[in-house]
Image 1 (spheres, each protein chain N blue to C red):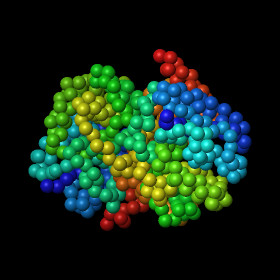
Image 2: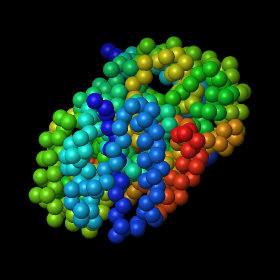
Image 3: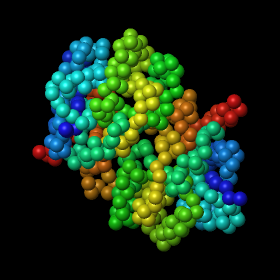
Image 4: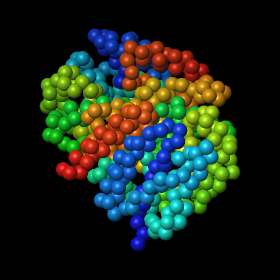
Amino acid sequence: MSKNIVFIVNLPETKKQGRNQPYQYSVKSWKTWCDKNDCELFVLEERIYPEQQMNANWHKLFVFQLLEASNIEYDQILIADADTMIHPHAPNVFELTDNKFCAVHNYGSYDWVCRSIENYKKFLFPDIDVPLFEYFNSGMIICNKTHKNFYEKIINFYLDNSEKIIILQNKYQVGTDQPVLNFFVQQEEIDYKQLGYEWNMVDMRRFEILDEELTFTKIGWLYHFNGIPDDVRNYFMNKTWTALCNNLAE
Amino acid sequence: MKNVVVIPAIQNKTQDKFGGWSWMDYSIASWQYWCDANNYKLVIYDSPYDPDITKHRVTWQRWFDVFNFLKNKNIEYDKILMTDACSIVKWDCPDFFKLSGDNISATRDMDNLGWIYNSIQGYKELFNNYELDITKYINAGFVIFNKSHEKLFNELKTFYYDNEDMIINLQTSIVRKGTDQTPLNYFLQKNNIKIDTLPWEYRVSHLHRKDLLSYNWQLNEDTIPFFVKYANVWVFSGFDKTQRNQLMQQSWELIKDRYE
């Protein structure tokens, strides 16, 4: 019987040793939530391509191939970054999708977002426009079987243009898979539903909710520990896991 | 009948926390241009019912007064936009009235979620510990409504004056996070008032927090700030208020030719 799947890419870091250390809390939180919501967690822990050819984020695009190669039946798929955690009592987000491609707008630093849109448009997608307010963060995406071809197109695009994309990534530092996914959603006219911030709470320090009281856990469901130094991420993911475990026991 | 844009623009001579008041002029000039271009009427709300605006803030009184204020001036209207005097509307902002129906329309506020969360907690007891849904929290600085909401705002007025001592104490001494906005949110949610959410490009505030004051310094082909390029209504809030005049003046200098 097919289930909804949560897919996380948690690859060993080769550039910044220990960067992925707190990702264990991400996997644990998602496992807890999946068990409560009759979903299956699938974690990719081995590289498909070497890091110099494809960084970890791009590996998320292989979800359909990996599930099918593993003979896993699936319905909808939630693709989460390994620096996210979900509250154990979060509602079943798969019920909010209307069976569409879903993501959350990338709130936060619009200097970064605008440069991302403008730079990728100039060098890779001159004929495609991405409206700023539709630009999503790729750290939490929900898709389904109907998006398999869409993902294959993006993989092929990457493989055909990887040299140029890697240069862009390194030169401008405005994202990896995220800008390309956004341009592809517009280019392919994907029916995209925007979920609320509570379903991908990026850049929490900027919004003054990443604090010792873990205010963010009282505001929404899915916490994205980005836009912060590695040691701060490590500290808060550890602290959050402890708090969420206690919350689960209540 | 025309839609109207109402801007409360009253200078409290006893308060100088804003570093002067001339910033209101930029706001009014932009809204006058936009209203003329769209055949709407701009109304400056400049004489509140209660002259003690230090005690009874203009931000509160605007909701109680607006219907009588328009009536006394013989202004016919269909929909009302209540917006802040620290906002500048982009010269070619699309007609947002067309996005609003019969419900109240507003934008979701999540600029400083920590502030909002603490404000909600601070006013909770006033509303009998009602559990306010923060995901539906709106900003009071850009709200569209119509005649059908007159009764609702009269009830808000009754609530305010029935609880004025407590509200003023919370506002000025205990919570110190905003004036009307959080109580308004409680009032609307408690009364199950349907709110239609407008796209947030119609009220983009905390420009510095969101790094919207910069431009694409990497391509360096266009020095127009991001907020001018991408947003429709710019709200100069969320920073030290003494800087408001300077920032609004600088912005106005940059784009004023578009309003001629």
